[in-house]
Image (tube, rainbow, N blue to C red; front, side):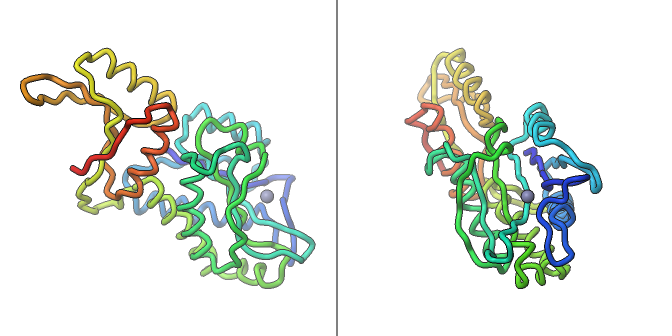
Length: 264
Ligand SMILES: [Zn+2]
């Protein structure tokens, strides 16, 4: 899978500031930790970052690049500020998405892992009309990792340990939400989704093309059942049922209401 990692702000735009810290630097460190954890531990992940360490980049340039790269997820990393009043962790998806949308499912899984790992107050899962959430063609999540102008949160941002924990929370969330396989793990695939079965190969290919347009990874496989050939439109196998269920949601959102999970 392709993950577009977006450390917020950069260049002339420091983002939030407080206690001698700047958001652009804090989120840069979190993002590079996430990148190396993903690249070192998972075999099937490609990562692209929206900016380099000192570079500034417009929001439009970032979303445009993620769209043309055809990322499977846009993950934007930020931290918050509120005049010293607020503290804690929260994350956002686009405000017009339904609570049962695939993106909301991804948010739920990732929120649980990040809020646990970051050791910050849990402010909950939220939605908003942010550019990077609205203008992306793929599921997009924006995480707000603590308040840079809050003394308690800012103190955490001064420890290497905290960056490692926050990055691990993001990566574990990604692993669970997208069924990422750890390098060297001999995973036994267990669940796959059948989106449809047809005698006519063309129908199967049409359905497969429709799902591909919605960024759902399926293939057509030929099976022989009771003397007849069937063309089955199916996803790759997921090691965890939860991951299969989340993908099933996405497929149902494309109008394939009778898609179902089988154990293999
Ligand atoms: Zn920000």
